[in-house]
Length: 365
Image (cartoon, rainbow, N blue to C red):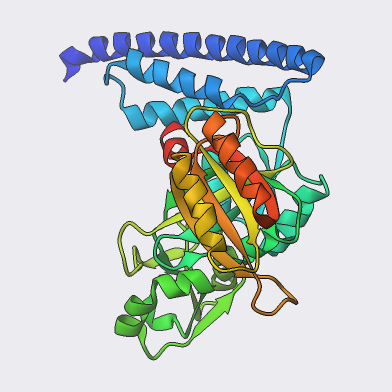
């Protein structure tokens, strides 16, 4: 081992030199980003160019030739690109708080650590903050692969004028946590209603006699557990660190592959990226076959419908609006034509936005 020490020292010196070069290049990169930001201010162009960012990732992945771990490369460059973009204009992101909810975790994964995060007490408030311009973006859960749609998010789209700017899909793993880490100390299990539902079978089989307590977020449950040794919380990995909790049981979700889709909301959707999704909110005419006519238009225009969900209109019994997700961007000709035709046969039509797809964003960001 002693014979190898000089070699280790030499290699470490090389690593230090490489790190110094990387740091200098990062400083140059952020300077370039700031200059681009100034030029965009002059021409009033959007700060975020999703097509350009996707091209950067594709080029780097190709040039990497699978030498550096690909997922790590994406993660590193996501933080670099996001930090450089935020140097042009810092942003504040509203989310369902408190700190360390799954929504907060998804926000950090999407925007990086350089953004400012604002915790709020409800999804409704997140929409209100964005609509009034008090925050640049908001992030909200919209559906879960097991429990389905998050209705408070869909209903908020019917109340507030915002646009969808992006999406991210995040695999959710639930942990039972507490102050002591001992399952015997837990007299109540607290969490968001969705988290409790996603773990209902595990709770029934393993802690069936312990009552559950729905609260407005997993972060709030973690806060309660931090303050009361008899409360166990179903919470995120981020919550464990944030509230200094102990893991009682890891991964208590009933189904593996449990994934939640989150939407980024703002005032203006981004430009075409090449891997996009378009969302609409529509109301159909009160006549037989109205919804079928809309589906026929989508089929004729060769538009792939990814999702359709109905929600009742508040105060109007038995009347509904429909949320439609389709593959493609409003700037693409077949999407543009399809939307124009749908608008002519609808009692209500609102374009909610076109934005980079979450399946791609999960890879890119």
